[in-house]
Length: 233
Image (cartoon, rainbow, N blue to C red; front, top):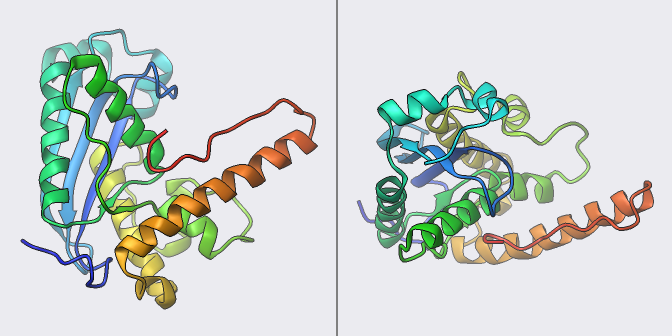
């Protein structure tokens, strides 16, 4: 299915999510992944999922979030070198078809995948031409809304069902549907060409990081720093 970036960017979207061994993009490993495609009404058109044996122990804290133990990953998972290559291949195919790739907090997932590619000697997936990050867009579109900005909170706010949070497939599909809900809620964003939306997110993410860094420094952490690089860190 071909999709023109000049069309409404929210019509057909590739969706992507990872669950990992931790939160440090330089050291954590992929445990589960989902790459799929949703249509204009959020219907699932394609989906591919992985359980990956990360080659290291999965910390209990991570297992409590996504439910995958070291034992299960070793028993059911594909070797990491294979899984990482297949995830990159699936994303590369989606990008080649012109599909915007949705990932909630995209800089985390894409950066983890980039580090994993380097770890196993694969050609890195350096980021598709068009990324849609509902977290960044929501913060920019509804800047002063109080409350959390987690995927669960965004789903609640925009009326998107999320039945199994921290399952890579459920999270990826929900993120895509949140992106579509944002486009419906803010028609001026839906009207932007996806290449322009991508460029704006680069600026928005940097500005959001700068604002957060200032807030942390003003509230007792004068040395606090954070990166606003997007979609790769």
